[in-house]
Amino acid sequence: METFKCKQLNHENKEIIGFCFNQNCQNTTEYCYECLQTNHSEHFNDCIQFTKIIQFINEFMQVQNQSRKQLQEMSKRLQNYLEQSFKKMDQDIKTLKQLTQKLQNKDYLTFKSQINIIKRIYQKGKENEQCILFDQLVQNNRYSNQILSLIQSYLIS
Image 1: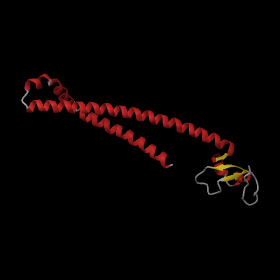
Image 2 (image 1 turned 90 degrees about the vertical axis):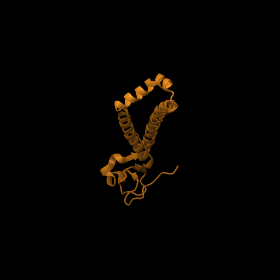
Image 3 (image 1 turned 45 degrees about the horizontal axis):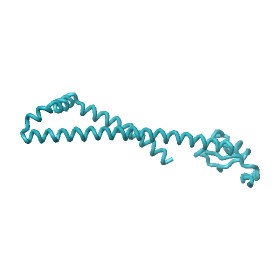
Image 4 (image 1 turned 120 degrees about the vertical axis):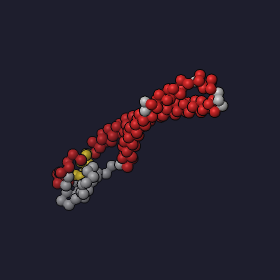
């Protein structure tokens, strides 16, 4: 493998030892020892030697893998929660439709035998559970938006 050489005046042909990762740096990305001392002295910590770049990349991949696993687990939990919520809502809607039909058919005795369902729903309404549920959904939506924002910023970077 050929040695990577510096092209800067006064230290051309010096061996390149790493890359600068400072996004605001206007100098060439690759640097030799001389460049490090002169062109990159204000952001020395952003200049990484070749041997350290591999370590940095491996650490970054570990962080990405761990973040991915956490997001997958969060996604599974959220999906499970949503599925349970949908099932409960579907069941409630089905029951309410049946009760409505009982009333429309003037089947008052059957309706009366299931009056506890209506009492429960009525009581929940009185306790403003709908508002509490709405507030919970809004709060969850905020978390979802924060998560989506983090994901979007990751994808953009």
